[in-house]
Image (tube, rainbow, N blue to C red; front, side):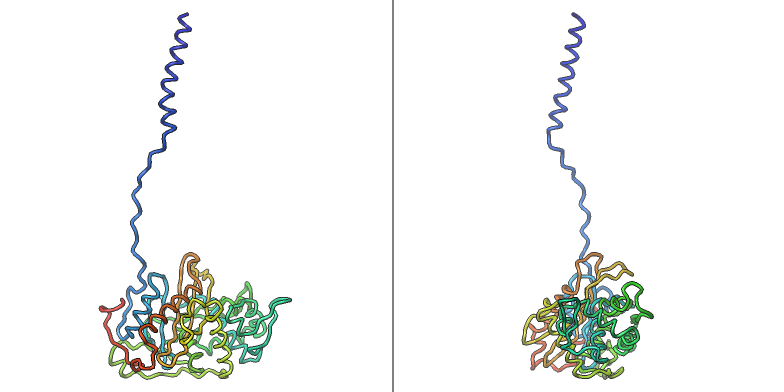
Length: 364
C-alpha cells in the first residue's frame, strides 16, 4: 500500500512540474532586441573632385543625375574637346574598364570603312533571323557583331581602335590620367566574337569614350581633351586636333542612325526625353572580372543647335543593379535638367564662357 502511495505522489509531482513547462512552450518566444547596424551615409562620388573651371550649370546637372551611384560622368564639348565637367575624377582618370557593348561602335566603323557591310546589308545571325547595321546597333545584337569581328580579323579591328584613340591618353596634360589598353591578341575564350561584341581584352576610360564619341558627333575630328582649371586657362583655351579620322561622312551618318535607334526604340530608351532634342547613344552592360564588378556604360551626344554635348556615364557595382539602361537613364536625367534650364536654347549664353568656381561653393 505504501509503495502505491509513493508511486501516486511521484506521478502528481511530475504532472505539476510538466504543467508550467508545457504552458511555457506554448507561449510565443520573447522578441530578441538586437541593436540595428548603424546606417551608412550615401556614397558620395564627388569626394575629392576639383571643380575649378567647370561649367557649373553642367556640373550641377551631372551631380544630380548620378546621385549616390558608384560611377563617373564626363561631359565634353565635341566641337572643341573641352571637358566641361567630370564627376568622380579619381574613377574617371583610372586605367579603364572593359567597354562592354560600347566597343560595337569601333566594330561598326571598321566594318563600314572596310566595306565588310553597308548600313542596309542583312546579316543572318541564325537560320531565320537577320539584322542590318542600324537595328543591330539599336538593339546591341551580340551575334551580329561577333560575325563582323570574325570577318574583320584582329589586325583591322585593333587598327581602327587605335585610330579612334583607344589605348592612349585622351587628354592633353591632364594630371593623373591613365590610358586604357588594346589587347595584344584575341581572347583565348571566345576569340574575335567576344572582342568585338563584348569588348573582351580592351580596357577603356570614360575620357577615351568621350573623345571617340566627339569625333562621331563632329564629323570625324579626334580632339585632345583639355580640362582648363582656371579663368586664365579658359581665356587662353584653344582646341587641339589629335588627328582626323579616315572615315567617310556616310559611314559616320550610318553609325548615327543606329545610335538614334538605340534611344528611340532600343537599349537606351531611358535616355530619351524630347523628340525635338534628340539623343544618340550606345549602351554597354557586362561584368569586368578583373575587378569583380558589374558595368553599366552609356556614351551619347545630343543633336541640337546650341551647346551640343557629349555625355559619358560609367557605372560600377558589386551586384547587377547597374547596366547600360540605368546609365542611359542617368544621362537622360542630365540632358533633361539642362533642357529645363534652357541650356540648349538658341538664345543661351555664348558657348565656351562658363561660370568659374573654386572647389568650395559648388557640387563638390
